[in-house]
Length: 156
Ligand code: FES
Ligand code: FES
Image 1 (cartoon, protein in one colour):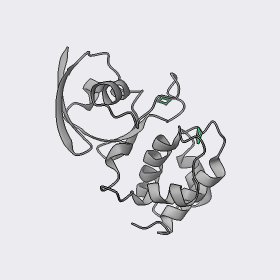
Image 2 (cartoon, protein in one colour):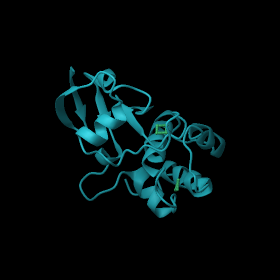
Image 3 (tube, helix red, strand yellow):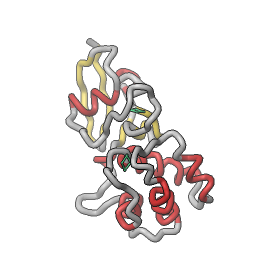
């Protein structure tokens, strides 16, 4: 076992974990953060995307011990009480989801891409989301949602 201390969604946590435990399993199984999901076992789908110190990472692609001393934000840390994050609100307004399975990862990745490109072109949005798969193939409305968030169309 290895002792880790990190901040998750604004709360400090310390735990003993198996050195081989993936971050996504730590978040889901130890912390109950089931908003972060596992959609593949090949690091391809992006459903498990969270932020590590403000940058998106695939949490199935790193170990919990690698998050020691860092700040992790999951989809569950975005809203301010009842008030959705502007990107969550944009997805809601533009129907950027179908089954919703990919949505947490899409939103986490979209925030990261908007931090890098606050006024992205459609091509930049599509490129920024290329590591996130939607099995419903609902990409059109997902891209619209991100562009809508960039326009400030979603209430902030
Ligand atoms: S579950 Fe992490 S990329 Fe698919
Ligand atoms: S909305 Fe179904 S996988 Fe994306």
